[in-house]
Length: 124
Image 1 (tube, helix red, strand yellow):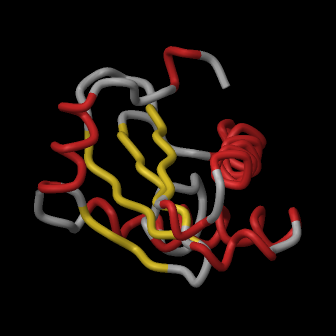
Image 2 (cartoon, one colour):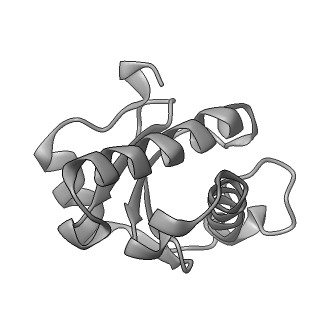
Image 3 (cartoon, one colour):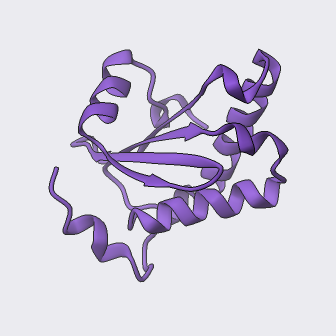
């Protein structure tokens, strides 16, 4: 994923955590918040409960790749943070793709999805 699509600053993560809207899945939590940049930015985080550094980085890479494949389907102008849960360590790539698609759909960020109107009605 290109650097311009990544959340990199601590302040961005803190703002998302405090002001964002959350959606839950068994493999991850998605927190979203609108931005005024005209592009989407994504962040990925794990806790040490996911495993050693190698396991945590592997989990983040899998989620990053799943999001990269969906970039063309996602509405623009949002900051998104995926908090990866320990259960994702044993999940297949297909399950990770399904989780990412499901979370983005729940949030109404998938263009043309039935839940697309949901995000427009949220108060931030």
